[in-house]
Image 1 (tube, rainbow, N blue to C red):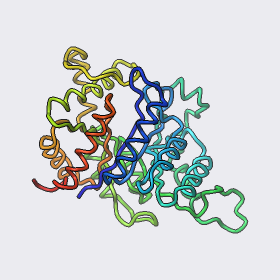
Image 2 (spheres, rainbow, N blue to C red; image 1 turned 30 degrees about the vertical axis):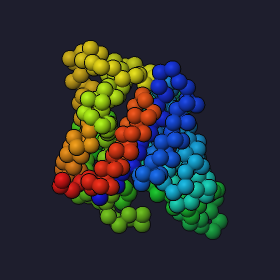
Image 3 (spheres, rainbow, N blue to C red; image 1 turned 180 degrees about the vertical axis):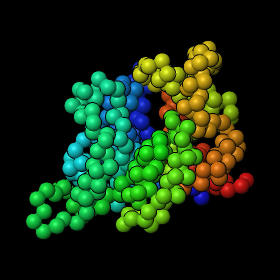
Image 4 (cartoon, rainbow, N blue to C red; image 1 turned 90 degrees about the vertical axis):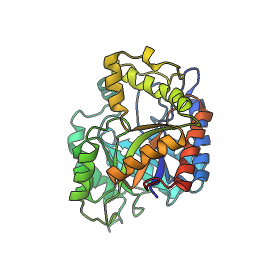
Length: 334
């Protein structure tokens, strides 16, 4: 059985507020826990009116406080935006409050545009120091040494598990070299997926945290009782990615009957390429496609994104996926 987890970008839909998005996140996380999902992650984005997870560690605490057993974490924290000590203190606090349930995924992108990066006082060269920052952060979670000048309080000795996130070969090589689990962002940037996974597994070095490689792939999944219904709800995601191609960032839009009327031919090509790792349809349709994906990639875990306009449709999609994994075990032949 492949492990299933959820990536929630805390979408703000047209006509609603971030407060509404947080309420939906709480509800989905509580359902996900009952349905047996492995972990529930949120991601750092800034200056995007349609994504409410900018204060990522705060949102993680909110989710963890309203659940009991599911792992909760960041997918991810954009480490070059922060000092490693501050992140160690934040996630040390979370781990102290919710022991054994916190994950810390790390990325090196800014999670926003250039102007917003400047407003955040981000060092334009910070990404170049990403490997050193990961090691520094990891050191703060290790045991404190006698007379250690700088400690993460809380944080020292808590060994919060780190993940490396990426959409290129760079992250795969870094995760392998550091012996950390690796999550590939194939839900929006799938081009290098196969090469990155192969490189990660071939170059992996065991570490104190991980004895063997653990690879996760991000996917978009929209399940409904029929293919037509699923494709209808998927049109909200297609509109969002089309808007990304247009350089626009807005609220999540309601589904439409005819996506072809929304995008141009060129926009369709670009958006569809980004959405290549999307699995949309009825349970029978999606199971067949997901089985093939898991078999071809050999991933240990799927991180599932499903940013749907209708909250009940979103719940139904994740419920159907959990049922598939329980009764028709994904990753094995039907």
